[in-house]
View 1 (spheres, rainbow, N blue to C red):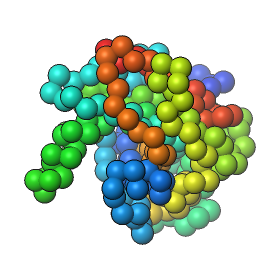
View 2 (tube, rainbow, N blue to C red):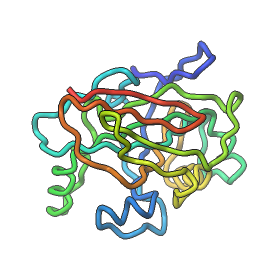
View 3 (cartoon, rainbow, N blue to C red):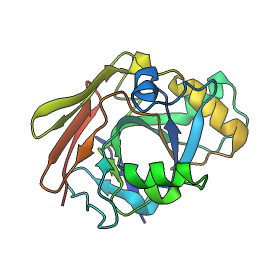
Length: 218
């Protein structure tokens, strides 16, 4: 079992499903040659993908093109279905920064064949998490800077207000398609600047005011 750790709290919440949002920054959609979506594009990861900041990402031997994607992560604190704006906001109880690691070569291959690309996203150590900061301890602005460095050099940098769909809009949409439960995580999408990483690279990412994380590719 994997748990979400909340800063300044002894509570650990068991992680359920990881609902991930693709193409939620227009510049990122464009850099990969994709259309800008008119509604959230979703895929799933499993809790077995999760590691904590400070642990290592293990580069799968069956891929030659591992990419990083730094993201705002939402922690859901109650069961909701078909939520409105108010209940969607209430359901978000904490925020973190995460890395959605992606096997880009496999993703492109599966897409070209018309097949699902689950195996490009779901593998051990493919979801790196910082600790969460509770709403009680942090007033979310929606304009925070999000960034990621590789070996000390900035690679991704944007602000959260560049997201096409806001956190509340995402929770509302997702809950209209599937039930969200306590412990579910929402990875809200990555800004432009994704790139290949190799063994030995040290990745550091963060969202100003919220959290930071660090991992090494092994």
